[in-house]
Image 1 (cartoon, rainbow, N blue to C red):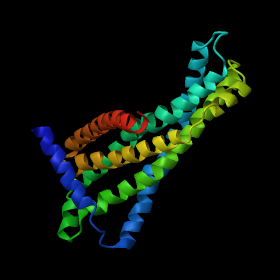
Image 2 (image 1 turned 135 degrees about the horizontal axis):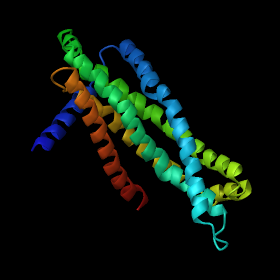
Image 3 (image 1 turned 90 degrees about the vertical axis):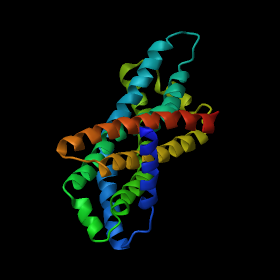
Length: 246
């Protein structure tokens, strides 16, 4: 019953979030700020991790297919499929859940315990719409760009790893990338990314908005937000894969 209560409260929160903003000029300013805080500031860590993950996937694949009966171009094929289908959209979203989710939960939670949200409500401002909707729009529009960059850098990282280690030739790797390429896989990855972005923006916002107590409770709420966001991402990944690829 406790979990059902939180689920119902979460959807009631979303109902308030998607009401029409009162002042578009203020909303636009908040949106650009959230794009910078939630998107642009995550660019470095996503680029760094995706590049080296792609290199590790390529090296591990090369070491595990070290057989004259297995063509070397399968290394590029496996790296490309792994990065597009799973590592870029899901693995990077879990990382963003930790980085961005904790920031959202702690920032909104701090506003709650310092009574800033109460002050917004007294002024007649829909605090949920004001605080959460810009975050949702910023993540859902910007994260597909981040994940697209992660796909490219992951595949490129595999290419660089092969060039440096001489485990496979660049020609075989590039041929494997082009082998049986299906553009729908990119569409599938971006659909997952949009869904995950919505989760990353809303679940931490829920935990931060309804926190009670002081700074210690804000820290606990941030931890719970990251955990539950990651759990929901993994569960949705399973169901989305069943629906979109099965």
